[in-house]
Image 1 (spheres, helix red, strand yellow):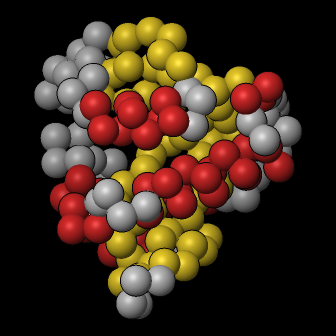
Image 2: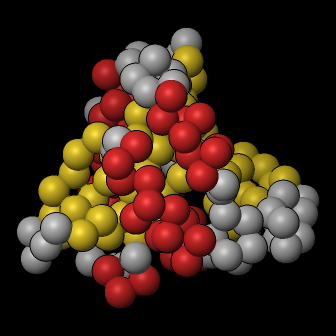
Length: 152
């Protein structure tokens, strides 16, 4: 399966929002929130979609201002997980953070998602804290950072 990454556009919102609701049922972003993110692209945002066989199978977003960037979201359709798409999306966000001069990239990940935490650790992210009951369903968020001396 060949996967193409490209910049997300408002024309992608229907497919992206369906994936958002399927991936994050308890705390999905609203379409208005996602439209707001896209309005700030490319000034302080960078959003990409992963397309396979003409279908959006994943998406990811980065916020960047000054010397700091934040992974806003990464989602991959359930049937395409563990196929390398999440890795491609994260690599794209990290490359954009470097291009924008970020010295650190931060993120929050669900404490009950060890697979995502392991992927981030493979990329040099280190756990720096916990945000108690961060998600709508009361699940904690693990906060992580990747410093520029680990980027490359």
